[in-house]
Image (tube, rainbow, N blue to C red; front, side, top):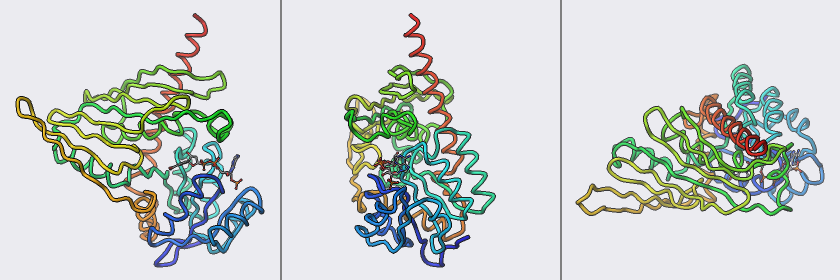
Length: 338
Ligand SMILES: NC(=O)c1ccc[n+]([C@@H]2O[C@H](COP(=O)([O-])OP(=O)(O)OC[C@H]3O[C@@H](n4cnc5c(N)ncnc54)[C@H](OP(=O)(O)O)[C@@H]3O)[C@@H](O)[C@H]2O)c1
């Protein structure tokens, strides 16, 4: 069992792919963190990554990392379908866990991880960096202050045509492939942050027989009367942006949706001309710093969850995504039987 020192969390990165490479710098810059090691399925990859990023520890298997002293927390950056097993093993080995989105492939698995984390007294969170970024934070504050009146509608999208020879995690059902769990998760999470859990869901799109969803539009309706129209895709481009319409104004979240550099707030009621203001947010490194900073602080304070992304919220978002995928499968099956 490991314990963070008083002033810093000693992190190990799990996986040597795209997101692991992208985030080491931000993790280092976040304050209260030391990146001490990497784990890979191969010793050669771990050694190369450790040399490139100047890390003291290089583990050629996840089991070796779990057994290691001097590592307080793991940041899991591997394909979706591997998250549950890695997070479970790390928590049981006494490590805190920050895991890339989606935390798991099912809501039940996230519930189970939450229970394991609580039992072992270890921190657990899905790395939903969008929720920690200054643009989404400020948007939620402005809405809470009533600046756009009552929020009634969200339109948001995120998607891009992933090449057929692109990363297998997008196309391989066994790795959790598809658009929704990779990119659509941001739109579902944004709707959840604004409106809560949907009562009704309508879905149209295309899903392969193996369950890999290629693209979908989904409307989420909420008990308050608010609704969200969302779209995601791995076969065509969906500009990563969104807007929220309220009874007295609107807020546009400018690209990229997961880490907007600016928002545009428009207020005013006809016949008065609308007044628009653009609010800029300086980027901290690549944008992951705010999340890492808050996770470090939470771990050092002995917290087991973070209030901005508690496990209950992750579970609810996964329940919504499971419903979307089930409805999309029904839609596919109805079409093929026609
Ligand atoms: N927050 C963001 O901005 C963001 C951006 C991109 C991706 N992500 C998330 O990060 C996760 C990883 O995405 P990525 O783009 O980094 O993927 P990737 O480039 O394909 O890399 C994943 C790494 O995971 C390791 N791995 C462990 N088990 C594996 C398995 N069974 N099959 C293949 N690789 C395995 C591999 O490293 P070793 O060979 O060293 O084991 C591989 O390099 C995903 O869950 C995704 O949702 C988040």
